[in-house]
Image 1 (cartoon, helix red, strand yellow):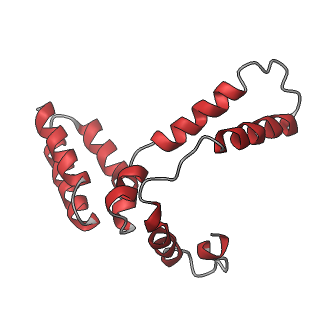
Image 2 (cartoon, helix red, strand yellow):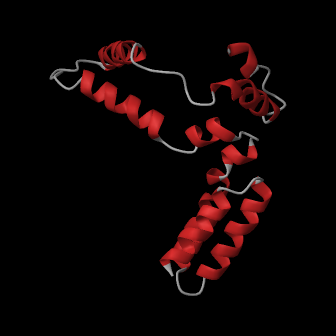
Image 3 (cartoon, one colour):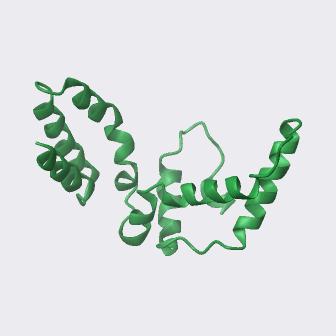
Length: 142
């Protein structure tokens, strides 16, 4: 049972198109419904979020980078390590100063994201999904 579910998830998440992956996850949820309704409900609830990167049209190295939490977990670990000896945080402004300082320090040890050449594609895809009433553009910030 577990191997079949693992394989179905892997197939869906490695599908070339979000629509195909959405169908595969829907079939998996349907097959789980009778014996594992909680797992089926969880799969249906998080389906769109798990397919976000595929739906944006990102592929190759940037897709592999963005589908994991590794970059943000690494940054969180750097901030925690930098701030580990602070005992009296004072107010919220002090917390912000320490975190900003930690991020500045961590920036010197960071490398480019794998697939960073596709960032323009990502920004265009995000702009295309921007609500009509929002006048700012992601590309302007980059």
